[in-house]
Image (cartoon, rainbow, N blue to C red; front, top):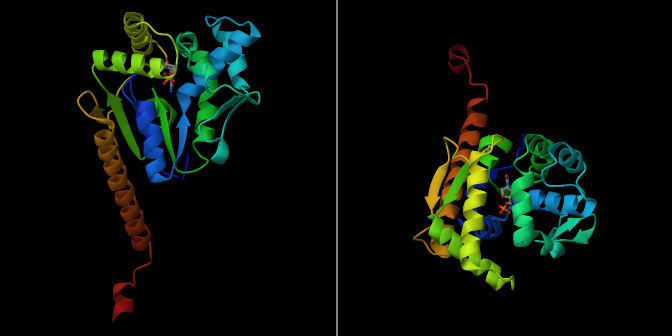
Length: 247
Ligand code: DC
């Protein structure tokens, strides 16, 4: 388990997780671990290797040695697969579908568990995904579950694709999202679920700065409560003089 603070952010596609996670990490000075990018890289890698997205066992073997790397500092935000930049290539609608399919296989999820946990021990981090608070890092300091109505989420997805120059159809975007939601929520392995101790933030009616202020303040409260608690724990572990010694 990591000795660094971990903020877990889970939720469905289009709830604003990626933007919130990135900016929250920046505000806190934490690094960002985008676990969706790992499943996306696996879908892309499988396609390059001629392995179908329905081949759970073969995909798990590929996942066990996935040559993924997240850029730091000057390369911040970049994702590398076998040393090639794939930051844009993993964000197409086709790879979104592939990532959703490969992530449904229990052997794949198992094979990627160690990688995600290892990456999360590298420093204080914000970890974004679907099962971070429930499965990957259940001991996270704070678990946030970001959500929004399905109409708002589909509209945001459409705007994001259009902004990135990807030709998208509004209705098709909504249908694809519903299909992904259904698969993510009903799959056997680690379905999208709200952890019992998660704080749910509905972003439907909130602008990004409001969401960020809210989650940042939740994080800072939790971080200082934890610091106080560990301070109290270490001072209470100081050996108190016995009654006899006091006199
Ligand atoms: O967050 P994203 O859209 O980049 O995720 C891509 C897919 O990967 C999505 O369909 C759900 C899946 N995923 C997952 O199953 N578990 C995670 N921790 C992260 C993503």
